[in-house]
Image (cartoon, rainbow, N blue to C red; front, side, top):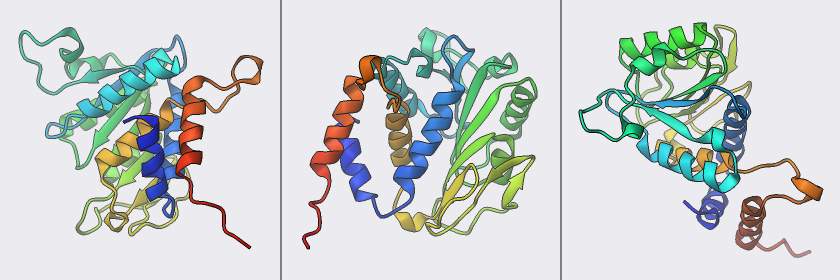
Length: 235
């Protein structure tokens, strides 16, 4: 998704918390994958593989000049003959540790085996982030989480601080608090849309570049925001 389309999407969602929430979460992602660190691992559930997010992060890494954003997609099923970038299985999580970031995309509760591996990776020192559907166990494992609620009853689980990690679970489009937010299906935003916004924001660089100039991609995003912004109110 190019900068103009992302700007249009942000304009549509301007009356919600999503633009700010996805930028905040992207900031957590960007700050956790430091240059020359252990890298970014991306894993979904057995039913949901976030290959689309992986492709967007690869693009953003190239456009923004931040190669550390390039993810390793960890897959539940690896077949003989798969290319190298699609041949990394769950065993890779067992080697995850300090300096690495693990991003879990889980619309629903993952199977117990994945939760155990994520828990072990966190204990070994990896930073765990999650884009989730509100499952309490997933959010409890994450240092930072962004929740996208699907239609239906609110998932069970406690709200607030879990295992020393602050995050809010706010159904129906409420305002987030702490280090994570949950939003209701009434916002009309699904997980795929949120992944677009997060990946785009992860590639943006808010810090000034050489001689105080921002990178070209950031200037393009800023220009797109200006072109799609509504006209100022007349007095």
